Amino acid sequence: MMPLRQTLSLPDIQLSYLEWNQGKEPLLLLHGLADQALVWSSLGDYLANRYHIIAPDMRGHGESSKPEQNYTFRDTIADLESLMNHLGWSSAHIIGHSWTGKLAAIWARENPQRFRSMILVDPIFIWKIPSIFKITFPFLYRVLPFLKAMGPFSSYEEAEKQARQLSEYEGWSSLQQQVFQAGIEQKPDGSWGSKFTIAARDGIFDDVMAEAGFTIPIDIPTLFIQPEKGVNRREWQIKPYKTYLNNLQICQVAGNHWPFLVQPEEFNRSVEEFLEKQKDSN
Image (cartoon, rainbow, N blue to C red):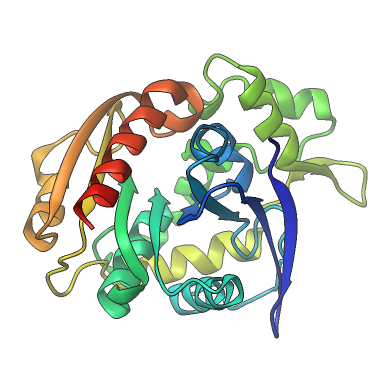
């Protein structure tokens, strides 16, 4: 069954989300920077008969509103708290990828009762980043794979040509094509580019710098998914998670930073196994 596209009206934005509503166990899927909810479509379809699954387009992304400011972790967590309240969820299993892996860690330390479990998929920027590194941001904006697809491009064909060269679209499966097409639009001037905005990019990077992901130990059952070609390949990168997460499992999977797009079958099974163990333990 295809997910339904829903919209929640909040005081400052419209929050768009996908919903698979066949199962009962609440599962919240949070996409990474410059992505949107459809990246979770394989996992959502795979788990739909057992879980009530919600995948929002984070503010500044996809079909959600794109304000010119208010992209802090606090703003985004407030969106998610409001979404859970709207759904009548007191808690959920929560998955965060990349940037929202750090968001999940911050949320978990501040409001741990919202989490039945936590899955971190190749998270990034977990530490507070010294302000001197801000001078490198213009370079990062040009070279980070998930920002290269922002555009602008003179045509859809040019945009697709660029996308096919990016790691997240390696293989160019039908799933990847759908994700790419859902995340791009023609602009008023006729050019093509990502639905993810520059204001969102700049605001999120500013707050990623300013806040540490870990400050206190966290007891929530947590799975760290470590793709073989992902960002976190060294022990020093994994160490903070081992230090602060008291109930941590690490699972290595095939693929790159986007295992749910490039190796979805193995990724889905890994998530399923962890979640089913949490249900059994409760």
